[in-house]
Structure formats: structure tokens, C-alpha cells
Amino acid sequence: MTNSIKEYRLVVDEPGVRLDKYVSERYPEFSRTRVQRLIADGYIRVNDRVAKAGLKLNAGDRLTVNVPPLPPTTLVPEAIPLHIIYEDDDLLVIDKPAGLTVHPAPGHRSHTLANAIVAHLSGLPDSGNLRPGIVHRLDRDTSGVMVVARNGAAQLNLINQFKARSVVKAYLVLVRGHLTPEEGIIEAPIGRDRSHRERMAVVAEDKGREARTEYRVVDYIGDCTLLEVRPETGRTHQIRVHLAAIGYPVAGDKVYGVKSPHLPRQFVHAARLGFHHPATGEYVEFTSELPADLAQALRDIG
Image (cartoon, rainbow, N blue to C red; front, side, top):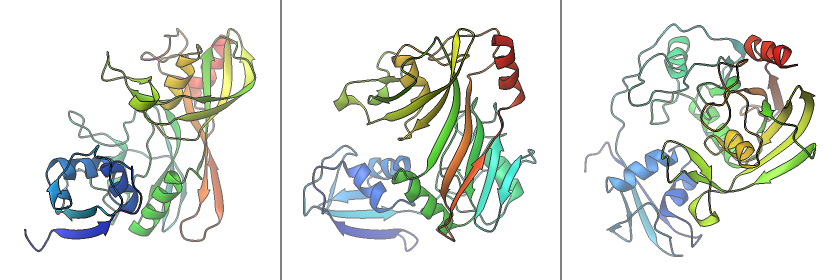
């Protein structure tokens, strides 16, 4: 073990929780994905023994968490234009366009929001997965408001607000069909689709993670319904999966919904984002107008 490896020790005080979840909640500066990688590589031990990420912990278990230094980042700054809604010493709030991936992934290392952020700012916190300052994400073909932390304290504060589900997230979503009742809550666990591993699905309670989505009807347009959707949890593809599961798929969604001659992409737009400013504690809220392609689709459908 080298001196550059940081070591943390703690005693479990909440029995019955998965190892990976317990560690990521105690140390929110490390993403759950990174914690799982540390467990798989043997850097996290339970009672001095190697364990699996899904191990259910007992009260009094002794955890040793060793965190090696991150490999040098290969994130290349790219001068990709950013639509900046707000900026100060702690935050960068942007209006993400559809078609822009948030962070690099295997086979997609360039032309992402992360590359653009690195080019725009310096001294950003590194969350360990080529996600400088990024505390949440939007799907590639989802547009709208995102917040980026400009320093480590702001990042940790925002991560904790998302974990506490105190962040207000409101999306404009168009679905096929006339959805009734006009207000409702969808509660159904989400996990990997066993038949199509690249997709998510509503699954049995013991196979997925809790997911809760609130919606209200904004308008009925043609044979579609425009909704304001507020996901309380933040599961992968949650809005699209939940609405498809109740029989009202998102218009233009080629994975879970239905293709539309009026839409080149899914009609999901992050219209509003509210949270407490990490430096002042004041509640702040930012909005994004419906982009031109989605506004045109509403006119065509109507």
C-alpha cells in the first residue's frame, strides 16, 4: 500500500443495508459506481475480508475503505458552445441541448458536456468518473436545465440535496393517448430489463430500486397529452419507463415509446430545476423554455 492511498475506517450502525449503498451514503463524494469498482478490486473489506457489493451488513461490522488515487484524466477540453442560464463562484447552470451526451463513456470519449465544461471552467472537482462537477444527468436526447458544481464544497452539498430528494425537478413530457386522471403518482420499482440488458423496466420489488413519479396534465393536444412530470427519485430512464408501463409511452421515444413523424427524438424537456444554493442556503429556481423542435412538434400535432 502506498502513502497515496487514503484509508477510512468505520463501524456499521445501520444493519441490513447493502455494502455498496452503505459506503456511498457515508462518503457521498464517491459515486456508487466508483464504490462498486473499489469493492470488486478488493479495496473495501468487511471484518478484514473481501466482500461483494450486495453483502447485507450487520451492526458492528468493521469496514475498511481504501481509496487509491484516480488515474490521470483523459478528458480533453472542447470548445463546445454552452447556453449558460446562470453562473457564480459555486454554480454553473446550463440549458443542455438535445443530442449532447453528458459525460464520456466507452466508445464515446469526446464531444460531451463534460468536455465543454472543462473547456469553460478550471479547478472543477473530479467525481472520479470523468464527470467534472456533474451531480446529475440528463439522457442524451433530453434537453433542459442542468446544474454543475464549481468546487468540491458545492458538489458535496448538491449531491446531498439530490440524495435527500429535496431538489425540485419538473419536466415537460408529451405522451401518446389522453391520460386520465389528470393528476397521479406512479410508484413502481425499476431495474434492468432481463431480456434487453441495455433497457430498464418495471420489475419485481426485490429485483429493482424504488421509483416514484408524479404527473399532472398540462393540455390535451391532438391524440396526445402534454404533462408536467416530477420524478421524486432519479432512476435511469425513470420517466420514460414509468409512463410506458401505464400505457402512455413518450412520443418520439424509440426505445420505450413510439416513433412520431413530428419528432426526431423523445419529447422530454427538463423545464425547471430548483434547489438551495450551496453557499447561501437560499432556494433558487431556474427554467428553460421549450426548444424549437419540440414547440414545432406541438404545433404540427395540434
